[in-house]
Every structure is written in C-alpha cells, then in structure tokens.
Image 1 (cartoon, helix red, strand yellow):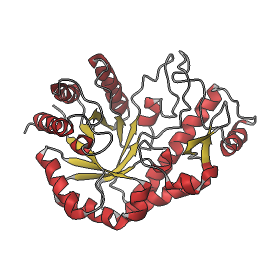
Image 2 (image 1 turned 135 degrees about the vertical axis):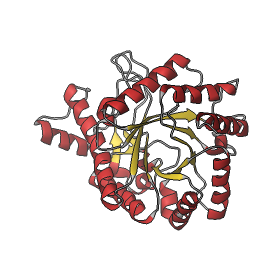
Image 3 (image 1 turned 120 degrees about the vertical axis):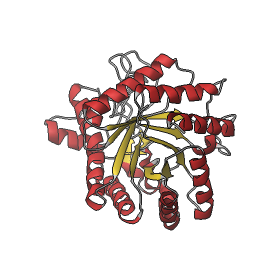
Image 4 (image 1 turned 180 degrees about the horizontal axis):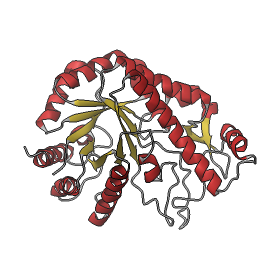
Length: 343
C-alpha cells in the first residue's frame, strides 16, 4: 500500500492543554497529521492560542495543515464570515436574478487583500507544515435540477466588479448565460486567487505544502455544478497546490462511484506530478454497517492514495453534525488507519 499520511480535521482551537490531549488521542487512532479548521472568528479571537496549539501538535509528531475554513463563505465550512458581516457590498451576485448571495466575491480588492493578509500572517507566525484549501467554490444559487445545468441554470458571480473585469478582458458586456468565455473567465479568476495566495505563502515559508481539495462531483457534460473548480486537470496542473484532493462521498453512493472519483483524482494528480489525497466522511452520516468505513479506507489505499483524511475528530461528537454513533465511527477510522499504515 502507498499510504504515507492519515489524518483528521480538528475544531478545538481554544486551550493548548486540551488540544494536546486530543492530539494524543489522534496518535492513538493512528493519525499522522491534523488539519486545523480556522474560522474567521478563531483567527480574530483565538490567534495566540492557535500558534501554541499548532506547536503542540508538531511537538507530538503530527504534521499540521492550516485550513482557511469557511472564510468569506468562499471556502467550505459551517462558520459565519466576519468579512461578509462587515462588507455586505462585496457579495457574490446571482447571474439570472441579480440577488446578492451569502458568499464573498473573491475577485474584489477588499476580499483579496483580507484573505492574503490572513495567509501571510499565518505563514509568518504559525509553525505549520502547510495549508489546506477547503472546497473553494463560487456560490451556487440552488434551483431545480437541469440535465444540462446540474443543480440549476443560475450561477455566480455577476456582481458589478466581475462585470467590469469581464468587459475589460473580452471587450463586451458579461452575458447572463454561461458561455464558453464566461466559463473560462470564472475558471481563471477562481485559480488566480489561490495561486497568488500560494505564492505569497511560499515567499514567507518556502517549505509549505499546499493542498487544494475540490468538490467530488461528476463534472461531466450532463451534470456539472459549475463551481469554478470543476476542471480537475486544470486545478491539479496549477500552482495553487502541491497536493490535489477531492472531498468526501456519501456512504449511500455505490462503491463504483467511490472507485471512479478516486481514480480520477489519482489520474489528475499524477499527470501533473502532484501528491494525491482522498477524504472519508467521519461525521453526520454513517453506513448501517460501520465496517464499510474501513472498506472505503482500504479501497483508497489499494488504489494508491497517498494521503487519507477524515472529517472530523471524534466523528463530530457533541456537535449538531455528529454521526449517530460518533465515537464508534472514530474508532473504526482509527483501526482502519492503523491497518493501511501497517501498524
């Protein structure tokens, strides 16, 4: 088996003595790495302890990644965004209805500088091994499913700023339809902010390993959600990451889908000489037979996945998104990790 790294995400960024005990539990569950999920509130309020907690994880032997969790609601995650609260005029806008959406427009100068300052501060002051780009995406205005538009024909962002940028680049007004030029523009802008952030991080901390985790959708002609990162080949080939990663899948999906997404992930990463990573659902939903969780982890390992992570620590125990048998899920993940690591 080729597994080099096993890990879990972690929210407990308040007190280092408690985090240290949790990190030891992760080690006991055969984790070699941890993703610290950093919300905007954490970064604003708990920053001194974030530094201490990252250091404690490293002292115990864990590899540490910093997750810009839910920042601007451009990245995936449940936490609210201070940026959106303080900058309501910087929202993404629905193309068809003109409705402001609950996500920042990451093309605006205000958000870009806000995000870059966060990345540079973390790179300077937190002794971590890398960064984790957690499901970056354009907001998806939900509507009825369409065979050609996936989750609906509406899309974002068509705010005034994006319209000006598009017209400056192409010489005509930004259409309300997803034309090839609009798709190209969205892909370019979606990668530009990550590439710029990655470049700024490496200028401060050159050894940083940067992981980009995109939604594990079909991304085909018939069903695509047009989140801006649907072209896996383009994402994996960009300077935005050293490791190409794809997100969790529901246990209700057929194992053939798990295998297909994993193979596509491996193919995209290997084509561009990048590391690869796959995620396991360790919260909210669980299979009726918990042994299936181990089956999925072993499948990833057998197929050649190098890094396997689970969201989240202790199966989300104590949160509204906890798996029904959260602690048993956590133990199952730990046992499977030990198996694929040969322990």
